Length: 90
Image (cartoon, rainbow, N blue to C red; front, side, top):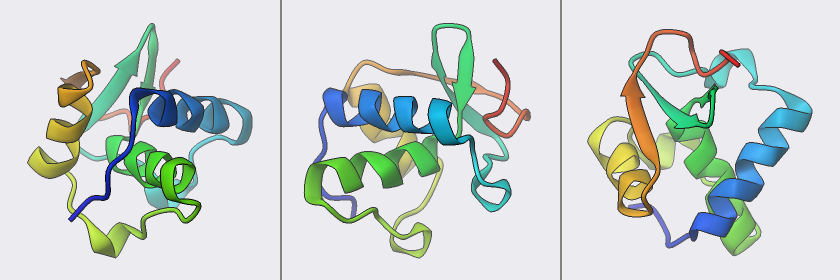
């Protein structure tokens, strides 16, 4: 189960990724979060967003990608697109 987080937490996670890049092991495989012209791995973004909300990032083993993760982002009005870039396209 994914703890609550806000749109502001997601935006902060995106900024963190812009500064530090996506670790190779955290790249996405099927979908990307699209923010402007940039793509981000949804599961990694959610992990960081939860960290912004709670003080502790959500470990990847504690939540699934796909519908669970993408649905939470879409609920906050973010765009999820089918993608194979790994969340590294800008």
